[in-house]
Length: 77
Image (cartoon, rainbow, N blue to C red; front, side, top):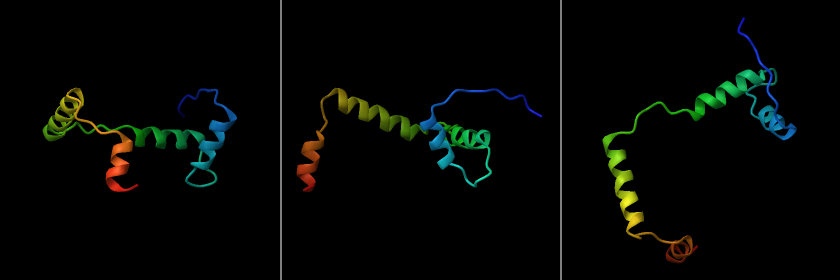
């Protein structure tokens, strides 16, 4: 059996974790492990993704951005 540890979480966090249970008897360890695995992305970025990020950063640095107000107006939202 694996060693266990105790962690302190707020009652609000405990309630959120209870709501994330896949089934009523699922352990907190299983819930936390499942959430941690979903939050981890081990796939490296592709060359195209990296280049897209670089282009976007250059646009931001050059001031080629639009406010949410401008976007809403353009799309009639």
